Image 1 (tube, rainbow, N blue to C red):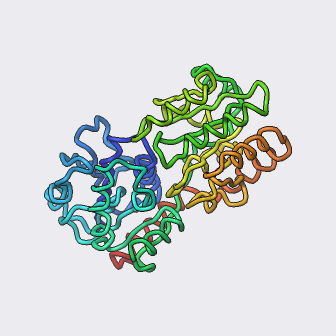
Image 2: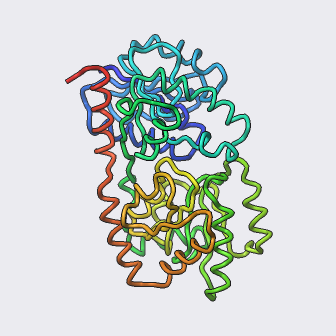
Image 3: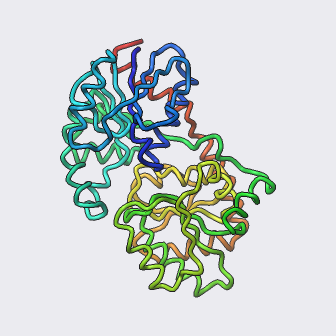
Length: 370
């Protein structure tokens, strides 16, 4: 098979879609030595992501989300003679390949149009219907996203395959002597509350701040709240809410944390919370469980599916419910140990080898290869 995988967006973002593309490439390199892979990456990349000898870098001039992307990228792809092109950010070029697979991570822009900029909303709404119609097959990160594709875009169920993501092997329980240098770099002590993800409205950070303020009224000498993630869009309200709630001394924003430091921060945290209104998968919750850190997550979208019985579910619309759950997990040692054990067991059910194997099965099915 001659397969193209489009990971151009990895140059422009540090979010979940970047991690998905790069980790999938590495897992495919471990799983498939026979196919010929062409990795579409930004020409600005100094070190193209080429994880194996059967992977060839293809430097592309066309940036993601450009208004002429579909046609310009087609002109770059057609010379490759691809049997199949896998677009990891759901918008394939208009031409230049035999068959196409796209990954749809979430449909936030349809569920919560108020949570993205008008420009992004117009772009995604303009692209999504054509993308799912033209694709030969669609990968969804979760059953929640699969259900959204079927109910909101009328995609036939047989056209969508759920392929779960996984935590990178770097996310694992660590010894104290490995963890302490990491937390010391950020001036922290173990036991803080952790939230990981781009600062954007669907993450429900104002609700988390309200819940944290309620906690401070109940528990003395409470641990800081550490928010790890880059600035997304429409995030000004988050900083305004910190000031309004007088939490400036309690809340830490870490915007540029290297990937290598994340496992240490997860291990040092008293818990991780993901109180989002909507997640296509919710990878930080899985990464935290893989480190043995208890998780408190929203009861919406994909999060209950991912954490299973290992996490504490809360109503993201109710700061009191979130505050109560956070307090319970932080103060009940036996509950924390039980959640730690269940989380490690749950995280072990996901692996990038499995993700690669199931993705390859879709490639072969689309191409009619045994």
